[in-house]
Amino acid sequence: MSANRDETLSVLFWLNLAGFCLHVLDETLMAGGFVAGVRTHFWPTYTAARFFWFNTTLLAVIALSNALYDFAGNRIVVVPLLWVWERALNGLWHLS
Image 1 (cartoon, one colour):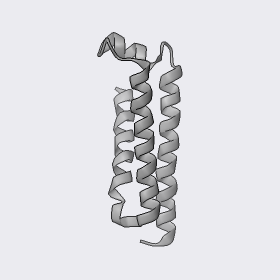
Image 2 (cartoon, one colour):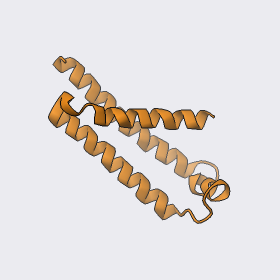
Image 3 (cartoon, rainbow, N blue to C red):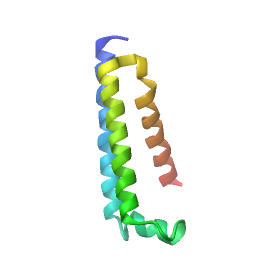
């Protein structure tokens, strides 16, 4: 793959992380908040601390995946691509 394609993928992977940051901010600030919605509909004991640590860990793992791609290149392209797919599927979940 050419250097231009590698750079384009890298930028897209980092934009995926930025989009996830905005998504977490949206879920934190939306009417009632994500935590309240989960408590009401799925998991009565869900806490803001769980929400925080889950998303902090996920943000760190995505950032690490992106950094590894920047370092190792196409040998591990599937790792950050999995996070792009995960974010896309999460978006489809929100549309339903």
